Image (cartoon, rainbow over the protein chains, first blue to last red):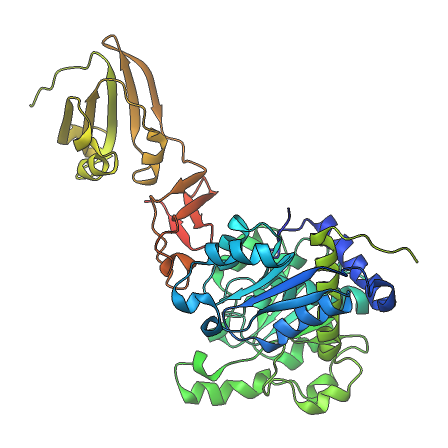
Length: 308
Length: 141
């Protein structure tokens, strides 16, 4: 039985296979509308995350399956002190597959170790969020046509942003990928990722603190939010925040075919005026998130894919 | 100089950093062992200046490689019939359970007391282990 706990649990081949299936789903959704009939997805969300939970539920419903679950620890037996291991043993009797979000890092792994059904990590604290990474990969693959030979700009909070770390880990497995790391000095990519991932894989990258300068080089611009609470003082925040806000003025420097991605929710780091730009792909990204989760459910449950 | 007799059969745990013997004594639970145990503290050592040594008489079935997580430079001498039949350093074990405690307050082990603390060897050269749950880093001394 397979689980998805870390973005690197699947090999490159398995990831490519999953993305191809997701693209098939995107091209003809109706063909997959009965694939999971009679199957149940349990969404065990120990902390609220409406977007991810609804994306999983939409994915299962699109496949003809049904969903059950809880959306906060208060409404689960965790409030009574039940362990994750015991909860998943019980959920395994009720459902065929489980998507789990938990504020503590490693909780979905503990669940996978005791589950009788496949477990998908739907986010464990600041640690992993593999279906977001798969969503990002599918968006790039579907809209650019390939995952290799890309220059990816990562902008904003590169220090604490787990989506950025996971995306780097996942894309360095494809040849010819380069990174431009755009952030204030306070929020630069942690040294261990530069050393253990970028340097260890001989990946070309540069660190800059001005977005406009590097815009013309980018195939992908992955935006993240610069959060006020990450700064030591208000002055620095005010000084720096506008440098990392994407607006139509900055978009003028970008290539015609550059894509803007964002894991969402956005606050103010992408001006709403950019939404109309055809290169803004962040809402399409949310749609691809559903497709990739559909593909994942099919794969982990070993469901038969109907032929054209 | 203090003289401690040789072993007929048993194990000599050598090259323990000075002051570290009691930690190993506790870790191996040697006080529960019904055998002769000698702890030599602050012995002279050309390599280390001062070192500790533990000698245990009798057969011992503990996986001594796990000691590498406490002190990497330890050497083990196996004695049989008054002779050293094996002399070796320790290999870092691939996986250790309940030896290293995860200190990450965001780790699931911080709220579920019964979960074993399991670390996997990430880099043998640098002696880096990572928690299997949260990937918290632990570097060997």
